[in-house]
Structures are given as structure tokens and as C-alpha cells.
Amino acid sequence: MTIIHNILRITAIVCALACLMVSVQSCDSHERLDTSIHVGYVLCADHSCLPPAEADSLKKPVVGVVFSTVTDDHPAMAVMLKDFEGVFCDSLMSNGTSTSTTAYDGESNTVSMLSSVDGNTGRYMCPIAQHILSSHPSGQSDYIPSVAEMREIAAVAPVINPIIKKYGGDEILTTGECWYWTSTEVSANSSMQSWLLSAANGGIMATPKTETHKVRAIVQLNYPE
Image (cartoon, one colour):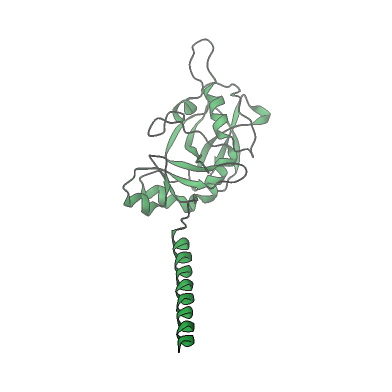
């Protein structure tokens, strides 16, 4: 009987340990949170990125929508909620952008545009850059997307438009007046033209800088790993 009792006791301990291991593994699995950013998450005023339902439950003000996740070429990016209209440059001159239609360099392009100043009057020559770099709700700097960045917005417009609309923003137009300024000048004629991009299909058209068109600000999401 003693032998049988000891066998039963050992069996019970083994079963208990097995149940404990399953329980621990289950808890670890349950508590392993997805901290990555996804297209369609919203950017809040405190620079946190959350699913829309979570942002709503926490009553966080929403300022943008994620349109691109992190890749080897760029960090995650969010598009702001509202359009702005203006001329690329109010005189025909080169503004020093990279002119690359494949680079994710809207930020440096926008800074180059802002550096375009009339030497005689000190007046900024690129009003859309001046506006965008001080347009973020808390005063931080947004920037004008490059051709490559604006193409990513156009590609996911059907996905993010309902979310933009939910928070009172201007949908990315994919019909009608669907042309948006990029921050990329035309390499063959950088003093005269910059690229407009159609959000309907991502096509670009060289356009005189003094024309007025829509522009949509974006921002990079740089978080510690």
C-alpha cells in the first residue's frame, strides 16, 4: 500500500507541475502584447499610436492616421487630417530638393523649401513649407510628402479614408480634384516645376510651382526600440 501511495503521490505532483507550466505559458502568451504600429492606427496628440477603438476609449485627441509601417527605407508615417492649399513657390526658382521620385525624403525636401528666402526682402518663397512646418497641433513640425511618400498615401487611401472621415478630417480624394503637391522638384526643370501626384493612381505630372493645389502634411513616427 505504501508503494502504491507513493506512486499516486508522485503522479499527483507531476500532474500539478504540468498544469502549472501550462498555466504559466498561457499567461505569457496572453500578456505578450503587440506593440507594433499598423496602417489604420491613429496618431494621438501625445504622439502615441493606437487602434481607433482604444484611442476613443481613452478619449485621446486624434491628429492623424498611420499610412505606412516601418521598413528598411523609412520609419512608420502618419498623414494629418486636413488639407492645405497653396503655391509650391511664389516665384520660379530652384528650392534645393533632392528631385528623387523614389526617395522617402519629404522631411529634408521641406526643410530645403523653407530655406528658400528672397535675399532682398527676407520673405519666405515657399508658403506651403512655411505653413506645414508649424502646422502640427502642438507646434511640432510636419512635412510635405515626397513623390514616394505620397504614392504610399494614395495606395492605402481606401483603407484610411473612413478613419480620416471618422475624426473630422478631409478624405484623400481619389476622384475629381485628386491632385496633391509633393515636395519633389522636377530634376529636368527644378527652377520651374515640381511634381503633382494624383491620388487616384499615383501618377505624377510636372507642374509650374506658382499654381495653387492641395497639400497634405505627414509626420514620421520615431519611437525607441
